[in-house]
Image (cartoon, rainbow, N blue to C red; front, side, top):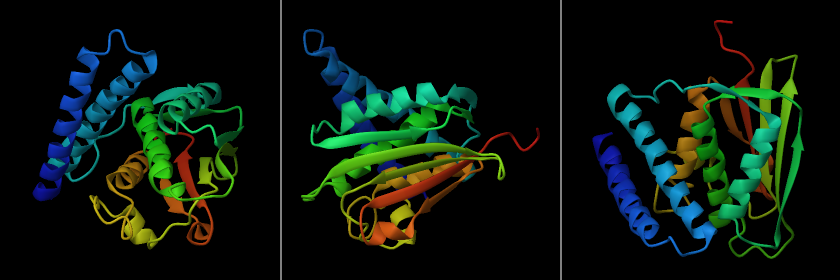
Length: 219
């Protein structure tokens, strides 16, 4: 565990220093450069807190949950898509119920940042077909769960589901999807939810189903 934490801390230090240096010289640059740097810094803070919680307690510290409406989430999805994907050939599609999620906003921004970055690196790398990302958010009254689906039309997953979620796998993309997906699972777990890689992901495209309880267990 200590070796893994040290690896991430070194990675974050490099990213943090890079972002700080870019930000200092970006006053006369385009707004997109500045917003990208600020996003890197925010991610560094979020992941640092994750590392601290896992290294000290063996798990993520309890999330700071607030109510976020579907309209706000749609705006977050669109902003992250514009900042990360940066490809006019990729289409973003939504299907979102009018509902409110009780989640840690900064952690959920990190979830979808990691999903978009994973898609950019692996989903569309060398893919020649139609490029689409589809996000749906449904409220299931029967199970009292929010169900979020994230899928892309690109390359299938080339590893087992266990390897897909394996923590701290950063080099061999045939055996794992990197640090980002293990963080996604850690965040969903901390909200009492589940993260599942759907079977069709191994033949075409890539589909994740994330579930989050509608209410706190004590309510």
